[in-house]
Each structure stands twice: as C-alpha cells, then as structure tokens.
Image 1 (cartoon, rainbow, N blue to C red):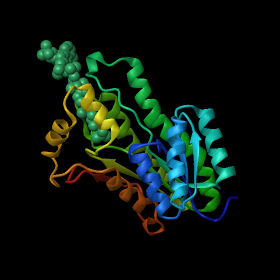
Image 2 (tube, rainbow, N blue to C red):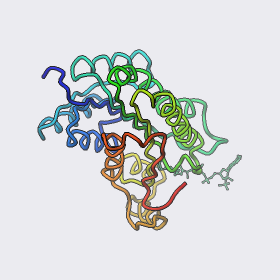
Image 3 (cartoon, protein in one colour):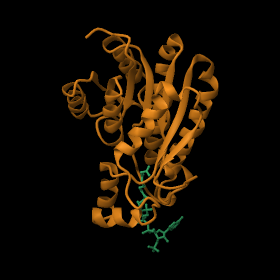
Length: 253
Ligand code: CAA
C-alpha cells in the first residue's frame, strides 16, 4: 500500500510488552504503525497480527542505540509506510545491581537503549513532524525515575527521559508537536517476570507483594499504559505537552 494521508507512528520496543500493546492500540486508533524492535521475528509477528486485524503495520529491525541504524529505520518507515509524525520511544532494558557491583557496561547499555535511543529516534523523526506541522512524541519513563533500589542506571535513564521530553516540548511546541512521558508502575510484562525469575521468587508471590503497595489493588496491564499513550497521541491532546503521567494505580511522584 503506498503512503497515504494516515498518521504514521513509529513505536520502539514494539515486539512485546508495553510496546506491542501500544502498537496494537495505535493501530486500532487508525494509525499505520512501524513496529521497531531488535527482535525482527517477534516484530514481524506483531505487525502480522495488526494487519490480520485490518490495520497497517511494518516490522522494522533496529538497534535504537545505533545512530546509523535508527536513521535507516526511520527512512524506511517514511518510504514504505509514510512520514512518521508520531514517535513512541518505549525500548528499554534492565541491568539491575547495587551500585558497588554495577559494571560500566551495565550502566552504559541501560543509558544507551533508553536515553540515547530516545534522543536518536526523536532527532530522526522530528523533521517529518516539523514538515507536517504536527507531531506527537511520547517517551516511556517509569516510577523508578523517583528512585528504586538496585536500579541506579535504570532510574537515571527514566528520570533523564522526563527532562529530555520536557525540553522537546519547549523546543518543538511551535511546530505543532507535543512531547509527553508516560511513567508506568508495576505492570504485568515479560520484563517483570524476568525480574522475579532472577530473584528466584515465584511470579505469583512477587506480583502479590507489589500489588499490596498499589492503591488500585491490582497490577497494571500493558493496555493500561497503551491507553495513556493513545491519549497523548490523539488530536484532542494537542494542548497537553511536557507532562509526565504516572500510570501506577495510585498517586506517585
Ligand atoms: N559496599 C559494600 N557492600 C555493600 C554495599 C556497598 N556499597 N551496598 C550493599 N552492600 C552489601 C549488603 O550489606 C549486603 O551484604 P550482606 O548480605 O552480607 O548483608 C550485600 O551487599 C547485598 O545484598 P542484597 O541481598 O541486599 O543485594 P543483592 O546484590 O543480592 O541484590 C538488588 C539487590 C539488585 C536490589 C536485587 O534485590 C534486585 O535486583 N531487586 C529488584 C530490583 C527491581 O526492583 N527491579 C525491577 C524494577 S521494576 C522495573 O524495572 C519496571 C518499571 O519500570 C517499574
């Protein structure tokens, strides 16, 4: 299908978890979605699922921390799907450890994927948004931005994303571009299942212990986060910019 007037979104880390739920949700909202991920087969599966459901999607393999790969991925998105005027920077990894045991590699890799990745993607997509006089940038922060034991790298990246996003809101506002951040709390994802496994705590037990701290009395689901992203991306949210929305089942921040 040739590029059309439909809004095109690039979603990173879209092969699973929050990114996949967001890609599906934006497709339901009528956007064409570039499913960007390091894991090409999994990205292809998500894109196929969206197309089977009647949407339009393109899987794009990319390492978000690699400047040339990001430029190529966004160029391919623009050519094959249309100019991306929506960016959801969701790709992320954890390398949890206490400070005294945290390696430089674990610091760098977390900062590279979250923070440098968001920078590279925003830089690569902004020109399409400026040309269109319309754009939506959403970054995925976290309640960990407020501090979390064992996550000096991750919390620094997630707090950094908030400052980065607010600056984009200031710089790009006059071009019709908004930039906002969604900060999830405890969500049922494969990433959190992996944390429980690493800690050798049964998943149900790990989940229940965290749910006890959540006023809503339940864990978040990826769709809870996708709903918040969908709002920020919507036309109706055009006067909402530079905000951080905690999606955590209670007051945080
Ligand atoms: N110098 C010397 N020793 C030190 C020290 C220092 N600076 N700091 C601590 N120590 C010692 C402690 O005294 C302790 O020693 P003893 O056992 O002899 O008392 C030892 O080092 C550390 O032992 P711990 O068992 O406390 O710590 P650990 O290293 O086994 O693991 C942890 C700690 C990394 C925090 C681990 O528990 C962990 O990974 N927890 C989960 C973190 C987490 O919440 N991750 C997921 C968050 S959710 C998410 O990421 C999604 C989202 O966006 C919300």
